Length: 322
Image (cartoon, rainbow, N blue to C red; front, side, top):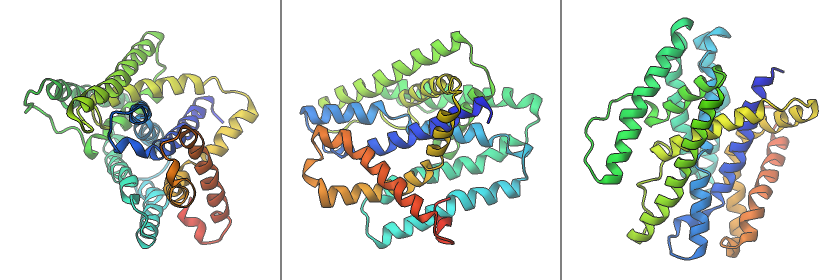
């Protein structure tokens, strides 16, 4: 296995764990001024990078797909590996009346939008690809994220948004993920990305807290996956994971990360069903307690992995958890 690819598996594992932690953080949406909501805000805002980093991984692994297989095969793989499982588990959620499942699965639609956009960049000649993608990222960042955020904070009406934010604004993550994957990030730019990430986290956590307290309700000025604070935070996290992942060379540790990575997509699909069961049957009265926040995510992950392991052993049925 190539050393540089280990970090992509590590990123998938981290993102899966973080997504489960976020989805067990229910009391964030029950705004109040007590300590529980303040902690929930730190968790919700401080872990905002999960979905963006997952999409960065997709950009890193798929942007050059045309070197490996045809566009027809590219779409076939996306349908088999993601679209069909998404549809099946959405139907299951609807039949079982699992409240909130479509809210949890909303990111799949943005991911599918990214998948549809990737072929546009995959066929750019290799000698121009990085420059074209860098240009698109730079223009999109300035006009679709930086200026809109400043205007939102200062309450200025912004009318110069350029329509480069394809896939509901999530495409930038795939493009940035590709650039970070292809380039060896220098020490200077790593420091810049980490400082930017710190600024993003402070804005996301602090801004959401202060504005929400002032408004008496959850304020979204600093929130959102396609908002500047999340973009800054996520880029720095991805760069950091790459640096850490490239240092993983021990064979057993590499195999462990890869094994866990193979269960990340099933965790995305199954975990909310497990959370609902835990909340309704076992821990419904303890959602505000520290013990719930510390233990439930990992219990959920273990149960989800166990369910996925069983399903993958069943012929035909295994196709719903690739």
